[in-house]
Image (cartoon, rainbow, N blue to C red):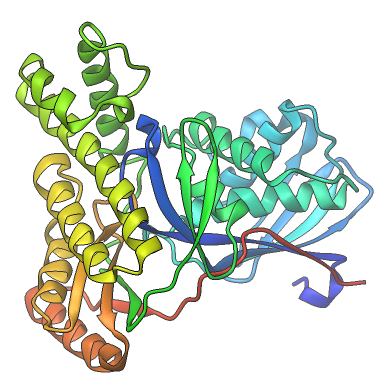
Length: 375
């Protein structure tokens, strides 16, 4: 078993939480994620061969990837995300060198906090570092997104990988997924704290209806483009949508209505944060969950139980599902002095109504990619 001290570099990338703006990154909208102190860390050293050897702190498995045969590892239970990341980085014209990697993931799998993005981004940054190549964080994010889409089969937007690569400590990111313009907003919540709770019903976006939702939004866009001069659903204003919604079949109308109104909620949320109006942010978070539940239909029984219980707590001003959905985590805005009591109440209320025990994560808002030379 390789030890951390045996390696030359320590390269990490963050999981992320999305404060508001769900399922609109692939529709060209603005989203508001933040990078978390929950990270995937890659310990790496060159080995002078044509092979990338991967081991894990949490698994007994080891995997060896031949640099010239990276197309051939899609079937791997463990190591396929790393293989895809290496392949897409190689295809982008970057040099790969043989190396040994020890992967240590502290982002809970299936939690909706983007463990996959953290793995992809940290792996690419580690490969560039061990090859002696300086890298651009945005290029790393785009390459990681390509790996998720082309290798892992999840037709994702750019939010997760961008947040994982480009996050800043203490900052939320107002990311325009159409242009990749990003404003950093201090995540100052006044008298409130952000509580992240995992419903502990694991999900897999590749196996879920995530890709189906994306295809539905693409179909809605094609229909609306017959009347509107738009390049993505995020271009549509609520007024325009009210005038054109009748063009869409019922299900597609529901999906598009979520996207249009969620984009508006993000714009309002950014204004609220700049003005220090955290109560308004809380109301928008509640509205976002209702839309995900009723229009986009990506929540599920367990996350809905968590959110309903949180919203019934007097000192919680907002709670919603965060991430791709069909399980995973919720976020709640809670009076800071009440957080311990809130966690105890929420976990007990959830356990009474489900067969799962939820978990609250202690995480800070963190930098994205970090690189440390060990020796």
